[in-house]
Image 1 (spheres, rainbow, N blue to C red):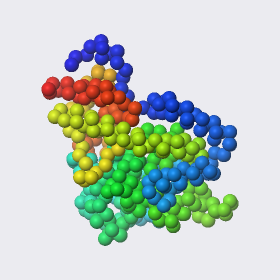
Image 2: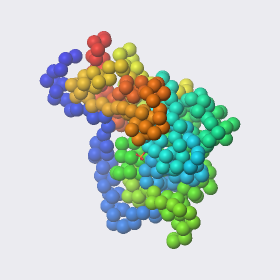
Image 3: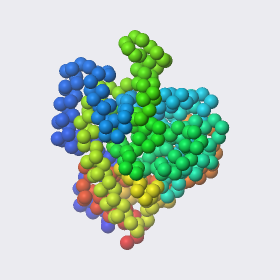
Image 4: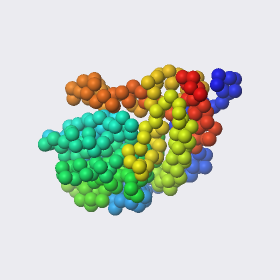
Length: 379
Ligand SMILES: *Cc1c(COP(=O)(O)O)cnc(C)c1O
């Protein structure tokens, strides 16, 4: 296919679309904004409590706590578990930097491990190798919306007495063996950043756990250790989910399974269409592994050329993420040289995120598939 006037006239396909892409939903959300604004109750209160109850039910978890971001969700989980100075926490280097930042912010040391070259995810074997005398916890990241092999991981963490904190920021609603992610380890940490599978109109996050003591401690810390008013039991912080975000998320939560189904269908269509092309696709970690396609990632040694080719065909792309955590400037003091985690480093050079969002059309899928097919001249 060559660049024709026809191609030029087509609307550019972005990597993702936010709520204005769905006018009906927008009307409902704008009404919610007005309702909350007129109530004038912006922190804590009934909207937050209702969201927490609905989100707990959705996840199939006894407790959910709304917090200010996904990063803060992990910080609070660690603090609530009593993990901090002198402790080590194992996590994959192929993740958003927030996973490591949360460990650092809690005062502990992130121990970054390599990922599997076919799934791009952390493995039980890599965790087992990294366990040392100071290891207290592991943070499996269900990256892209693809689920980690939790059964294998728990077989390693349980005998070692390690806590498991699931980073579910990219996998809201995904299942592992009949259970939603976030409920398989000791605690699950969600982000409601606008582009996530469940996102608000600003920053937000959530924690789910079956451990009542942990839930109570997180609730205390997120709001100045206060219970009741002006009785400060522990040194806490300001890390609440805003009432406005909670109210918006309540509306969107009712649609999450439908959107995830759309993402799964579109992901499968892209996958089928890209079969036999020059790009490689990540595989599932387990036979029954779920994928809610927060990101649709392909791999090619010619990434920059593919990006330009797609761009010329009106298709946006992105890189999640161009640096593995151990090679960021922020984590230079870990002293992890180039070559120390070869799979994550190679992936960072070769991965490309193609467009995928629930309102994407079948024509969009076909345009993306056609554009990738004509890259590098294969069939
Ligand atoms: C988005 C994200 C976070 C952090 O969430 P924020 O709400 O942006 O703080 C953590 N981990 C992963 C894997 C993420 O994608």
